[in-house]
Amino acid sequence: MSLHPIEPYHCVHGGEARIDCVLCGKCLTVCPLFHSTKREELSPKAKFHLLRALGEDGAALREKPAVRLAGLCLSCGKCEKACPRGLCVPDLLGRARARHPGWRAFVWKHWVARAGLLWPMAASLSRALPAPLFPGALGAMMGSLAALDGKNVLTPWLRVVSLEKRGAGEKVAVFPGCTAAHAHKDWLAKAMRLLAGMGFDPVVPDFACCGCTLGHAGLQGEQKRMRLANVAAWRAAGRPKLVAFCATCRCGLKSYAGADLGWRAGEQDAWAMAQTALSGLMEGARFEVLDNAPRSVVYHKPCHGSGDGGDLRMLRQAAGERLIYKEGQSLCCGFGGLLQLGAPELSQRVAGSALAFYAVKPGDQIVTGCSGCTVQFKANVPEGVGAGHWLEIVSA
Ligand code: SF4
Ligand code: SF4
Image (tube, rainbow, N blue to C red; front, side, top):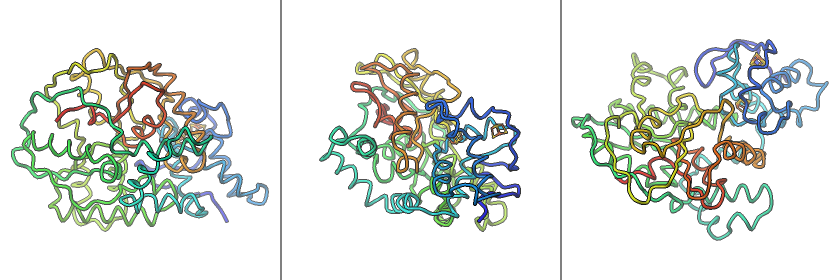
C-alpha cells in the first residue's frame, strides 16, 4: 500500500503543496523536535523521505516502526512555513495515519469526542494521583491531565478599566474550543463578559471541536463531522462574527474555507470574514495593573498559522515593561496533540527547551493564547512559575 500521495494536495493549513523535497535543509532550522533532540531522523526532511520510501518500496522498510518514527511530530506547522515547496509534514502524516489507524488515533478520537465526560474526570483523577507519584512518561501524562483542572488557574492581576464600545448590540458567536467548553470554563465566562462590555450580544451556539487535531491524527471522517456541525451551528445563529480565543481553534476554523463542506453561495467568503480574535476586538481597552502582578511575564506566541491574533499587542499595552517577548525560530511549547500519547517524553523535552530559552524564575509567569500551549506550560513549568491563558490574568 502506498503512503505517498503523489498528486498536489490542499494543505490543512491552507494553500496547495506539491510533494517534492529539494534537500535545502531550511526545515531543519525551524523544527522544534529536531532542535531539542538533534536527532535528524525526527526532522521534517527525514519524515518526508521516510514516507516516500515507504510509498515507493514498502518491502525495503519495516513499515510499522517506520510509520511510528515518521509520526513523531508536534504538528506545529513551522516546516510548512519554512519550506520553499510548501511541504506540510502534519498534513502528510495525517494522510498516512488515515491509512494506518492505530490505538493512539482511536484513543484521541474518543478523548476529543467525549471531552465533556472524560476531561473533568481526568482532572479529578490527577488531583487524587498527582504526577510526581508516577515515573517517566506516565508522570508526564498525569501532569497534562492536572493542567486541565479548572481550579488550576492564575490569579488575575490586570483589571479592566474600560473597553471600547464597538459592538452596538451586534450578535457574535463565541467559539470556546474543547478546553474552555469542558475544562477551563472560566475562560469562556470572561470572554462573554468582555464581549458584553464592548457592547456585543455574545451567544454560544452548539459548537463541536474545531477538528484541527483530529485531522493530524488521521481521523478525517471525524474531523469532517465536527466541521459540518460547526458550520451548521454558525448558519443557524445567522452567520455572525465568530470570536475565538485559542490560536489552534482559529487555525482549525480558518482551514474550513478550503474544504468541501457543502457551502451555500457566498458562504465560504462569509466564513473566512467571520473569523475574529477576541484580543483583536479589545484594541483600545484600558487596564490597571494590580499589586499582585508578577515581576516579569513572558508571552509565548503560539506556533499555529493564525499567530497571536492581537494578543501580544493587547498585553504589551496592558502590562507595559513587565511583559517580555522573545522570538526563537524553533520555539514551540511541545504540546503536539497525538504526541502526548505516543511520546510524552519528547513533548516534555521540547517544553524544557522553550522554558530554558525563556529563562523563567520563581515568581515569573508565562501567558499565551492557545489552549494546547496553556496546558503544556501548566504541566511543565518549574516550581514557583505560573502559566496560563491570558484570559486568566484579566479581571473582568
Ligand atoms: S510540524 Fe513541527 S515538529 Fe512536525 S516536522 Fe514540521 S516543524 Fe517538525
Ligand atoms: S524545507 Fe522543504 S524542500 Fe527543504 S529540505 Fe525541508 S522538506 Fe525538503
